[in-house]
Structures are given as structure tokens and as C-alpha cells.
Length: 506
Image (cartoon, rainbow, N blue to C red; front, side, top):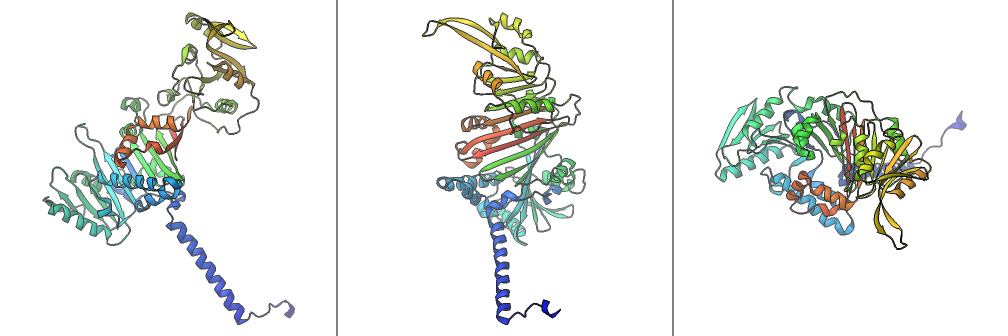
């Protein structure tokens, strides 16, 4: 057995081995430290249940949880922006961060930057009186053991010296300080030296502390929020809102939200390079009996070969059309009649601002069913290479002396799908293209809507969104010029709406 013994290690070899192992450990530790200290680690963080959720009431209309160090926001903007835009990106995020805190009466640089931790949250509750501003509760975590308490001392000392009267009392076993200043009736409480609650009014803070005592009243035990977190979501922020919050957040009319029975939204925001990604689920609380689009939607998507700005797949009896539709500037009589007569699923793709392509079941509706209404609109049917065409002569001639025709649209079938378009060349290209689109996602929902918008269309769309307008006001500068594109998808199943959106910045 002696021949199998390893030779003894010399003292010099042992020293070298120890040094090598030590350097390796230091290297791994250094790599881990660099990863954690880099602002880019935001991209891989898994969301967890926020400690502040216990102190935010479920009755809040809109809640936002941020799970990153706000001090690193400017550094992140500088890290992912192009070289010529790094300073402007960092400056925009700095102003946006400072502006958000300024709306609550806090000065980020002077009052928060030296102690605030990587978790903060805010809950907004609207008043039944439109003339009264919403109340809010802000939760701030501390990264030091003394930072929160020192902040409150400085916070109230500054406001007391400015002439405000303070009220100090005990509520739910906690010290509660509030101001009697009618213009800024702020109130604060300290939770275990780690969490500071700041509220717009004393009664709002008392409601938050009341809800912390009952699981059914606070957001920590909210089933939909808990279910969302169990899906191992990654990101930098969590969103939660009720019907009122959905209306304000998405810019939808309150009446429409009520009609669609949108009850609650839960979602998360992630960052990936210069992209901002939103994933959310809106519960409707109802169980629709309509069958899903299922395989037919997949078949249509796989056959669609065009580069479309927007795609909408909807069921005639579904509700998605009233939420998110493809807007055609000049739909024309064919599309109007097709949408009126179609009784089943419909795919509508916008090729450009005026040209569209649609798909329906091969026999529903039939081309013959559109002949009479299109004839009344002045367009007569004909057939060109097995393609149904509705057109009329314009009375004008081209250079060759031929009369020009005005096209209402055309239709042809392929693989049990009937395609329709107001552009003959687009339709012919669709019918002649062989193969399937391997990039088409799997769809198993009642209704689906896709949009992939370029810089100009994205900026135009965001420009009409009140939430985006508010962000630009807080940043004190236009944010739209940095937008380089927008993609979003909305799926409707029997009990909910799933929303995914990606905003690209240059």
C-alpha cells in the first residue's frame, strides 16, 4: 500500500498553496463586493415582501414600493446611457428622485440622503371630495441604527423653528408627532428605529397604524400581492392599486374601469439596461363563459408575416376592444363592415397609419355577406386570381390613359384563415408567403393585443398620458426625447387581464 501514498508537501509548497487559496478567496470576495456595490445589480434583484406593507392599508387607492437604494439611481442612469448622454441621464434621474420627495415636503439631499435605506413605500388615498388633495403615507427604511431617529429630531426641530406648533402623543403604543400647521399638517411615527412613517395628516397615519394591527386591513396579507411575490418576480418596485388607482395610473375613464369590473392591479417594475419593464395583473373578479381564442390565435399569429406596429386579437363577445384597440386613421367601409358583421375572433394588424391587415375564421363572415353593404357604399365586387376585390372607378386616368380605381379592400383565404386588407399588395404578400412565424408567442386567452411602436409613435402616446406628464413635471425637464420605443401586450383570460410593457430609452 505504500506505493499509493502521496509524497509529502514541502513547507514552501504549503505556503504557496495557502497564499493561492487566500488570493482566490479575496478575489471571489472582491468580485461579490463589486457586484453588490455596482448599480447594475438592480437588474437581478428578486422582489420580496416589503416590511412597510404591514403599515399600508388595503383601502389605499394606489401603493408603490421601491426596493433599491435611491442614492444609486443617478449612477445607474450614467452606467446604462450612451457615452454622450450619461450626464443628462444621471441629471434626469436625480431631478426625478428629488422631485418625488419634494412633493411630500422632504428635501432629499438635506434630510434623507445620508441615512435612507434601500426600501421605501408610499400609499395614496383619494378623498370623496374632488377639491381635497389625496392623503398619503410614506414609509422610509433606515440603513443605520440611529439614522431614522436623528432624522425625526432634525425634521421636527426645523419645522418647529419655522413657527409650527407640534403635538406629541402615544398611539397604539408608539410615539406620534404631528403638526397643527393647516398648510402642512404632517404626522410621523417611528417603528423599531428602522422604519419611519410620514403622513400628510394625522388621521391618515392613525389609519395606517390601525391597519397594522389587523391582517385583513393591511397589504402584508393581501392574497393577490402575496401570490404575485410567490412567482419569484425580479425588479426594483411593486405596484398595487384598486379600481380608482387603476383609472389614475393607466389613464382610463372611471366609467370604463367600472364597466370592465377591474378591481385590483398588482405588478412589478424591472430595469434591464436602458429598458424599463412593467408586468402587471388586473383582477376582474368575474368568470367569463366565453371560450378562449386558444389554437386559432396561435395559428393566425404564426401565419402573420408583416412587420406591424400594432396587433389586436379579440373575441367578438370579449371586452378587450373597449380597452386597447388598433387605431386605424382611415378604416374605410370594408373594415367598418367587417367589424360589424364578424361574430368570432378577429386579428387586426396595423401596417402603417392607414394600411391594415385582418384575419377571421375562413367562413365567418363570408365575402358574399359584404357585397350588398359595400355596393351601397359605392364599391362593387370582382375577383382577381381567386382574391375577392371591392372597388370603384374614380373617373381619373393615369399616364397611360387608364381609369384609376379606388379600392375599398380585398380578401383571400389561406390555411383555414380568411385574410382582409385595404391594400391589395399587402394582402397578396400575406397569402403568398410560405412558412410560419416561429417567433409568434403562445396564446391561450380570450383576447390579446400587441403593440410595437417606434420613437415617434411612442412619444406621441406617452405625451397624452397624465402620469407621464406628471413625471416630466417632477423631473423639471422633458423625458420624451429620450424615449426610443414602446412595446406592450395585454391578454384577457376568464378572470383577469395581464399587462406587459417595455419602454426603451436611448
